[in-house]
Image (cartoon, rainbow, N blue to C red; front, side, top):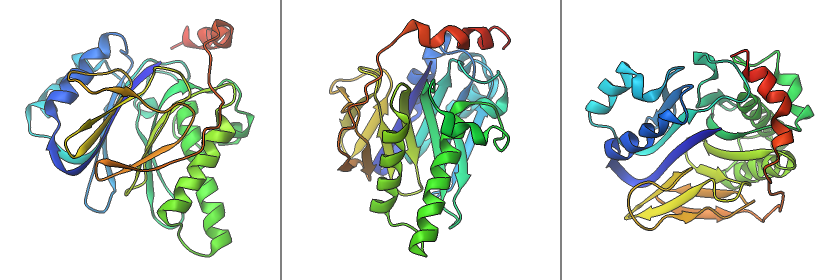
Amino acid sequence: MCEMLGISAKRRIRANDILREFYSHADRHPHGWGLATFNDAGAPDIEKEAVKATESEYLKKRLAEPIEESVLLAHIRLATVGHLEYRNSHPFAAADNCGRIWTLEHNGTIFNGAELNRYMGLQFGSTDSERILLHLVDIVNERQIRHGRALDWKERFAALDDLVGELAGGNKLNLLVYDGEILYAHTNFRGSLHVRVDDDALVFSTNPLSGAGWEPLPLTRLVAAKDGRIVREGDAHDKEYIYNPNDYRFLYMDFATL
């Protein structure tokens, strides 16, 4: 699978140490790394490579310079769907019809997702994760057409909440998504996404990192964060993913060609 890291803070914080610790896990997730930072308008600057994070000279130099952000996303990949290429490294970004840019990273696998197949010919890469993003943007666009305007943040929350309820059944769906204003987090696999309150910041991580206070993220419900605090939680959809090795049988055949 993969590991994800997300930060939502009230002010810019120095993130170098936590990023170094996070990327040090790349020995178990060697198939690529990514980092998304955001300008004042919420637009992403995405840096990524399809190489092991601990072997990246670029990332080493990047982490040697101060990284001070109020929102960021980071990812290390263990591939299950999609070949080892730059275009398959997370995070992914796409704009809706009102110009809002959505940035998504995923830790999981879609085993039952026929509704995503239509994006195979439209996506830049070949991951199920990118297809989730394209489906989300389509849902947002459909609702914006219906309303005749851009969605407010509560309506955007509802759109993503509906998407996770739609896709979670039978799939491992751990997501961090940023829409330029709100950072969303979701897990339906027990013990695979954690959160820590750190002064005026929230830190989300697949596995607890250094420091006390890590708690499992609420299971099977969407959480929204802004300026270092939780601003909304959705209702639990109760579609918990339970690991089943048979789910991966055909994926291993694809992985052998990576």
